[in-house]
Length: 110
Image 1 (cartoon, rainbow, N blue to C red):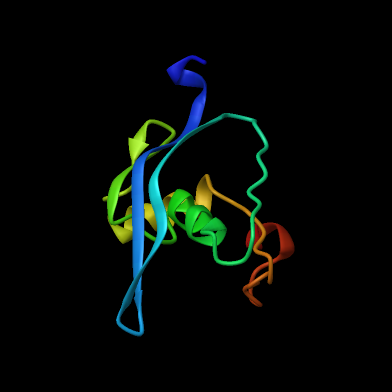
Image 2 (image 1 turned 90 degrees about the vertical axis):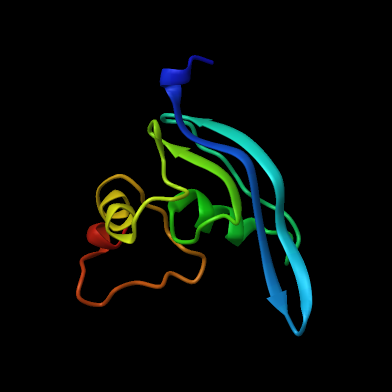
């Protein structure tokens, strides 16, 4: 796989949450590459980190450590303004519970 074919790459990505005084490791040293035009399925039991992975890959959340390379750019430390522009123009997915914005059309919501 050529580096120019890779649209999203996660490199040593970690994400933890604190709940009720406990540390929950949602993502541990995740490494993956997704090519441009490739479709993937993220599946697993409740609480295994699927939503966290998608949120981090799309820039909706930031990893605690590691890099997210999106179309050649490390978005793990991008500004909120830059992430917003990327999500508006290059990133789209439909959430499980939709979370649609009422003032946008169906296409604009994707």
